[in-house]
Length: 225
Image (tube, rainbow, N blue to C red; front, side, top):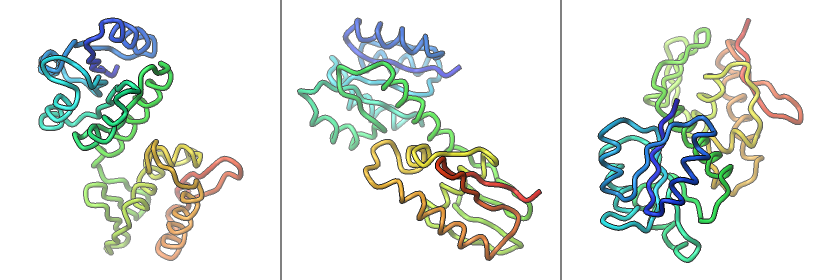
């Protein structure tokens, strides 16, 4: 069960978020300011932090920077509409996402789930093997019959995601969310373009896998039987 750090000097917000995260199946570590939050992190590891911007003693931006220096976990910043400029400062401090108050609990949970999936995918360093194809996440290379191929970053991330879940169909929306991020403002056809490039590249190199289309749904990777 994932443990989420919730940091806000408003006890009503902490109670509200804690209740909804607990109902969603998460454990929660609560803190009222940045200094207390760092103590919570020392007590037990957390998978993600939800941090309010305006807090006494150590504000959310300073806390985010401190977390970035010591821990490899995603951070979601909470900010009021009147402080929307905090968005840019938050990203500069190292936050992964932000949410404007007031917010719907489902929106927060959606963003938490998306970030946790992305961090897990980025943290996967084991070699992915499909027949004679070896995919190396640590250096973004693919080895086929003793030859090494370097892929553009997004193509590699797309291949890695599909190869980690052979047979699982991903919609274009899911692929956009996990590869390009929830704030991507481009067209979903970007996915089609990258899939086409992967197919063109690997059809010439190997028959150990193929990327299939499920019309009207999305794509999946099929290993050779």
